[in-house]
Length: 185
Image 1: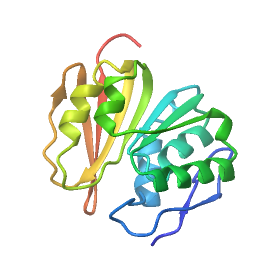
Image 2: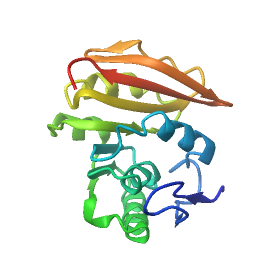
Image 3: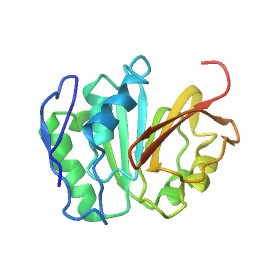
């Protein structure tokens, strides 16, 4: 399994744990994570972040390390949430972290938001992102961004309500889709 670390910010260089086996968590490789955060670097400071399908928590921790105000980490696997908690502590961001166990759509049905940044890295080949994007549309602040990591070739909508896909990036077998919430920031 590739080594995971925080790339930039207050926790730069901190190594992060992951659960063994890619069936539970699949770490985002550094070059993809760097590209994702470069594309939103001015949005992150002070942002309210949601890391849905948190896995190891590495994406939300990266946002907190780069100055996000807070992050809610959501995963349905208790073992993953234990790793998220340990990683938040190791990175020194536990005070800005809210860790919750829930299935993604159930969580979205019961949370208000708004979030300035939503990070999605669900299990591949399960076709869950279209439904999650639709459920997210009124949880994202006007001017907010959703970054959705998926397998290359995943069928994602151009628009999910107020969320409009503005870019897609390809990194080998990985695709990252950027959605923005229409409206005034």
